[in-house]
Image (tube, rainbow, N blue to C red; front, top):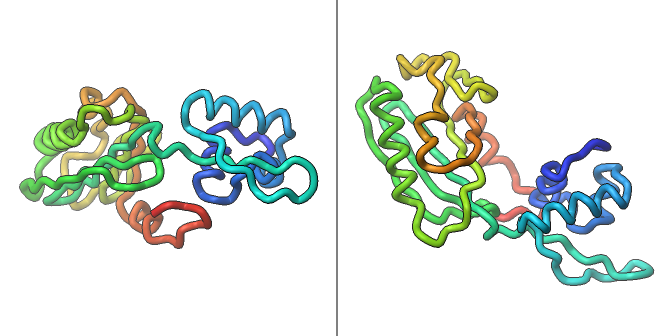
Length: 197
C-alpha cells in the first residue's frame, strides 16, 4: 500500500485497521509526511476528526483519528426481480431511513428506475449532510466501470442500460454498481475491529 491515497487511508481508519497516524504509517508504508498530508486533506474535507489522546508508548501521546460519520450520507438501492429496497446511511453504516417498492416481474429500467429515484429523493430529509455516493446492487453480472448490467437472466431488458442517468436528479454523486450476491456476502462478513455495524 505504499501508494495509498487519502481514500485508502480513510478505508483503513473506517475498518479499524488503523486509528492513529503512526498505525497508518505502519499499515501503508507511507512516510510521516505523506500520512500527515492525507490526514490533513481528510480533516479539511470534514471526513476525519481528531479524537482523544491515546496512552503513550514513549514520547508524545498519539491522537486518535476518528471517522466523522456525519460528514455525508450514502444512498443505497437494491434492485430485485419484483421488489426494490432503498435506504440512506451515514458514513458509519447506520441506516437513517429506508423504504421499499414492489414492481411487476419483468419490469424494465424505464419502469423501475424512476420510481427508485423518487423513493430515494423522498428519503433525503432537509438538513441531511451531502450525498457522497450512491450504491446500487442487482442480480447477475454487472460492469461497475460503465454502471450497467451485462447479463441479468432474471431481469430482461436491463443489459447495457446505463443506470446513472436515472439517478442524476437525486444527487450529484458517483454511482457504485455491484452484484447483489457480492454485496450480501460483504454485509455478512465479520466486522473488523472498530467498524460500526
